[in-house]
Length: 214
Image (cartoon, rainbow, N blue to C red; front, top):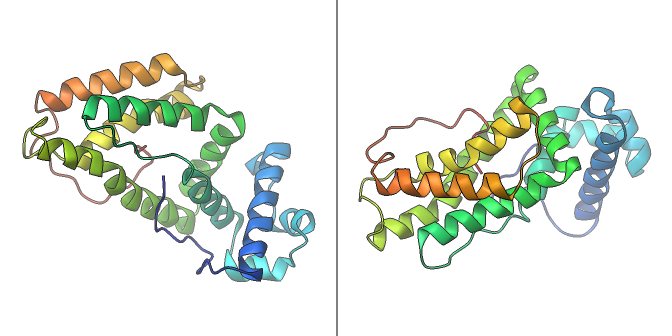
């Protein structure tokens, strides 16, 4: 899902800077695939990417910053559906999330990001900012549903999207089992039923502070 979030690399211009950024993120993904987060170092990323290690420290400051930006970059491939009705939108998004996290490399990445955020304040801030921006974007489908009269007017889009995402993160991070189409269907059905019944109407929420969104 597209987001305006710009984590530790401060800008995303084209040309040489864009090529440098892509080379670094590709190297980070490959290093995570080879050895996981525990063995990831700035020096290994520099060697694999061909980018000087000083550049990595200047733009991303830490491996935590690198893995968080990689997640932000990759999540842009998850589309936000607009099928004209919320049940279909929820199901389409749930299946897109399943396809995204169904790839082993991606599920290992989210594990690395959450692990980094638990230890590093910068990574925690980046992850929090990511979800604070991503959830409202996904919540547009809920706002459209309210406008169509499908849901109570006071339905909270953030709570609906958090409810949709939570089972996937539980499956990946807690149960440590793969996500699948059955999970996507059951989650979308449950969230639609709860939203239609008013379960997310009038709920109050503060800043998003954990990885529970889509």
